Each structure stands twice: as structure tokens, then as C-alpha cells.
Image (cartoon, rainbow, N blue to C red; front, side, top):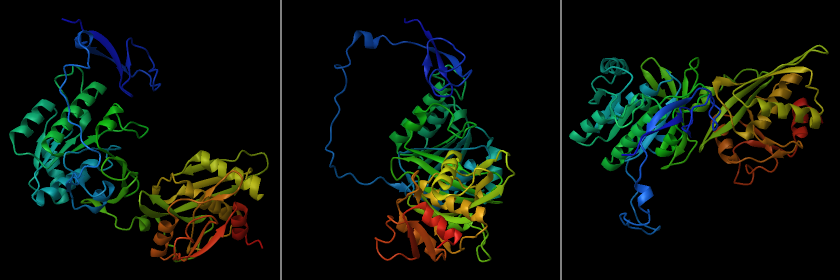
Length: 460
């Protein structure tokens, strides 16, 4: 019998090492290597892999297979994030900060599908069954016919699922608490997470059940466990939000059965998560009064959906010799530094001695490069104490030369702004808003950032 050998597995990235060391060579994490026993196989040494296997059947690429059946949960924002609902035989992974509402959302989905006649199984590895029942009763789903169990053994879970009729939906909360007796390590380790997820996903695909796995996140917001877990599943959903704000965003970062970067927006209420049919209204303040300097509305794109958010800027002139501070919330700080440099070098604004504070209202996080022009306009408006009209939106990417570059989905951005009552838009001259049909707003196009700055400052 082959002698077991020792491997050291990084609990952060899953890389292997033959010896223990303080820092992982691949991801740089400290004290993350854990010893695990591995029994080597001698089959590959005695047999060539080109023979002895089972011959597989190949199919033509242009087949006429039917589209996969989807389970529509009845929660439109959740179904939108997944591209139309859960697919039978698929595995989805949802991650988010502790207390963000992952279990609440999944319990609502389970209750709605169960009431619609679907067979739903909810397995909790973190809470007792009584705790889950109390939360369900508080949310109004106490009478939903959901099969509930508190278990952590993968063998027991799969045996129980196989003994009953196939479930339409199986929810595992969470994968880090699951334990496979085929692996000699503690629950939550890389090997346990990988082995447990593999067995659960295989069972779901063979039985045609939709599987949802809840995953923990690390302190930097990434999913805990091996990266291979994200490759094993068909969809990865990130549940985002701040505890100090009532909104939650469900973002699809991977989806084999739909588009990526789709989002669903929810609001945390006393009886659970409520859908937000108009997300733009959630991130905009009351703009019927007098416009304030430094406040600009930007139409951001989330997948195929346009969401209007408010960007707020504040500048403060300092005495000569003082070190200015730059603080940003909801946007990339390095990109803010680039915008300030372009404003000073290409537009003649003296911002090197001014403190600059930038905030995206509502706790929203922006990564769209089209926000460059809106950020620059907010800074100029705050610096000059000249408000931008309340019925105007701005978007466009800024080059280091001061040129305004066009961005994608201009028409969708303009339509969303017009739907919410905005009448004007400032955008790059080369944008596609004016070429693709009649634009619903009055457009002002600029080829360079300096031209937009002159308009804000009222220069001729």
C-alpha cells in the first residue's frame, strides 16, 4: 500500500506546498498553510491514460437542444440577476458579509417556490431548525411547505435527499459548515469545501435540482475558500450593501446561463427584503428644490440596466503650505487623483492646495469609467460654488490629454434619465446618443473637458 504523504494547503488560495512555511508563495497570505494527508495513486504510473477508458459520444455544435427549464421564484429582482430564474441542474453560489441578508433572501425564495407547488429543501449548517422557523414566521412564511433540516454531514444530506422525491431547489447554508467524511480535515478548510461542494453539485446535476450554496467572505470582500469553488458552480452572486443603509444589491459576477453584471436591488424592511422597482429613486436625493454646488447626477450601467446615482463633491481651500487631504467614498481613489491632475494641467484649475472630498450617495459603489465627467463636473461645481442644473445628467470618460471619450450604452442612459424627469444631458461629442434615433433629452456635446468646465463656470 502506498505510504501517505503530507501536503500543506493554503487556506486562502488552495495552493499546495511540500513543506510548511510562514507565507504562501502564490497569494502572499501569512500563516495560512495547513497540513493535510494525501494518499498518492500508483495507477497513473502503471497504465497509460490513452487506453482503458470509456469512449464518449461526440455531438454536433449546431444541435437543437431545448432551452433549460427555469424556476421563476416570483422575486423579480432575484430572477433578473440570474437572467430569468434558476436553471434546473445548476449550482449557484451566493456570498456576502455576515448579517447582510443572504439567509433572509434565500428563505423568502424558498417560501415563495414552496407555496407555488415546488419541492424545496433548506438545509442549515449554522442555525438550528427552530431559529430558521422563527425567522420564517416573522417574515410571513411560517406556513410554507419547505423541507427544513439542520445538518452538516454531506453523506447524511445526500442520503436523505436520495431517499425522497427529487427536490426542485436545494439550499445549503453554508458550504463552509459542510463536512465530508472522505476528507480528514476540519470543516471550512480548502479540502473540505472543495470535496463537499463537488459532491453536492454532482448530486444536483444528476437529479436535475437547482442548488444554491451560501458562501462566507473574507475581510476584503472576496469569497472565502478555494478559487476553484467559483469555477465549479454555474453562477456566482455577490450580495452587497452597508449595514448603515437599507438597500442591498445582488450582483451576478458569473452566470453560465445569462449575462454577467446584472443586478437586483432590495431594501431591508422589518419583515424581510423588499424589491426596489425603481433603483434610481433610491440613490437620488430630492432634486425639486434649489440645486446645491457639487451635486451631479450620473447614469451608471449595471449589466443591461441604467441606474441614476448622485455624485457629491466638496472642496476646501487651505492656507499656503498645508497638506491637502483627498477622501473618496464609493469610487476609485487613484482615478480621482487622475481627474484632479487633468483638471489642473488641462483646464487651468488650481486644485493642488485644496482639500477634495468625493462621495457617491446612498453607499453605492461605482466602477464605470463613464463617471469621469460627472466626477470632474462635481469637483468644478464645488470649487467654483456654481451649481449644475438639477435636471441635467453627465457622463463620459476623460483621457489624460483632456479629451472626452465616448462610452457604451449612451441611449439607455439617456432613456433612464428622461424617464425620471431629467431634461438635459452633457456628454462627449463622439457619443452615440445623438446618432441612434432622436434623443429624449436636450444634448450638449463637448470634445474636450475644458469646454465642459467653461460651461460650468459660465465662460464665453
